[in-house]
Image (cartoon, rainbow, N blue to C red):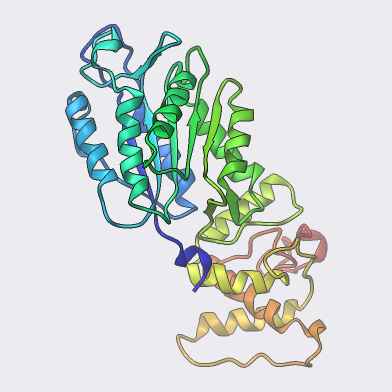
Length: 349
């Protein structure tokens, strides 16, 4: 069993408030942002916890009910709590707006104490689970600071949390957080199978400019990819095409065959694999023409025979219909004359 499979599941719990009774609040396209964050986290096994309450009915009662259901469960799991909507702070106090909150948020907004109570209740009962809290709202930096203070004030409250605010003392721009998260996961940490949450928090704080990350004893918690990271020294366009090919494979193929095909141990940058075009074509032809059976690939015991690499390259090629350029000399990447040449395919892992 892999470490990713053995670790507790990751729940993505969005609290998105995009419609407000008070006309003083601008409506926000929050569902779009929730979708972007959910897709970015899906590579790490995060499962979205859908909220069926209609947007206009997401007042304080509905929010508290959702927070209570999330924080009171006995199942051990990691959590990403994502709040997106309007926020407020006067420097001493801070609040998050619900659908029913009037323009004066001091009256009916969700206070840091309220959210801290849910976080402490959730963390106190889940020793193995970490919590990443993202406040994607205006003036959220002060809210996150007060939230951290409220969590520490409870001596029996849970820890192992990372708080991320998407803005400082001013406005938050919708889409900033999701864009920066996608960049961090898909580019900054693209070659990393396990992304330490402290490192992710520092990078988000750097890229969000006015944002902030507060580490509340998050320790060695990490986001673990459900498929191997793509460690390759190739241009971005080729790397993106390789990721699309990987996404079409089954989990078993990604975790077992692909590392062998790269000829690395999943911790190093792989070197080029080239040649054996005739053997690859023979294997692919056999796989496509036969629905069952056994094909034995044999050769000298020396590592240079590349039995594993030849076999592992051939399975993705059969499934994809053609070989992705950039995956070595490919039996299916041909010139206009139908011949396969080294110059017709970029060299990479």
